[in-house]
Length: 278
Image 1 (tube, rainbow, N blue to C red):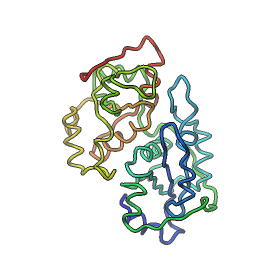
Image 2 (image 1 turned 180 degrees about the horizontal axis):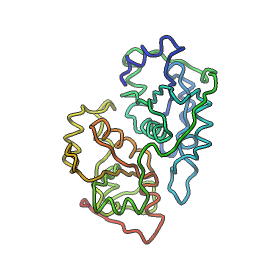
Image 3 (image 1 turned 135 degrees about the horizontal axis):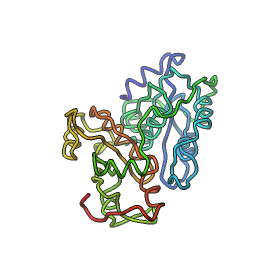
Image 4 (image 1 turned 90 degrees about the vertical axis):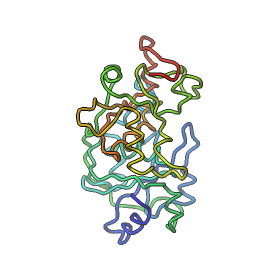
């Protein structure tokens, strides 16, 4: 979604989409003070760590949220089964894409990402509202998890051998040269390096569809219907959602490995690859 389109949709407010502010930083601090300082009018603040994930554990640093708890949060934000939802972050949609994916996984059909985030909104002349979120009538949405494809560790191992598995982390992390977050460096054997940052341009907006298609073709993904299945992982299932979204924009469907690298390495029997090659 483009910023001017969202501005038009917010008038009249009675038929406006539910807007979620998903600004987030890995490891904190909280972005709530920034939300209070200025956000898209009518938006609700989302705590990615608390609202869009369960606590860290054997399933990784950002396991999928408990469906009942997620349903409660969505209803608090005024979301119904047929609501239109627009999510945004600061600029490049890496956090907003996690919200897009989780809401789609939960069964919501109409979820869009504001391309370019809050930065694009302000550049387009959008006004900002300060203070806490406005009160809204609670929603009635029913969460039905499973509407987006996922992979577990065994499925990832099979897909790496039989399909295309993309690693959405930065290339140095893929190669195992650095690992700023997890205790073990490297990548899942058979995975191909596909940094999420290559999905967007210098302003944080998604590159054109044709450019995304060319990028994924270089990684072995084309429009041919006989192509093998596609999976994506990252460190903990957050930025990988951005590549799942980018693939959808490019016309392809991919499964997310929610546990990602942080779950993979929790089992010392699972193999680890180093270097630039799958």
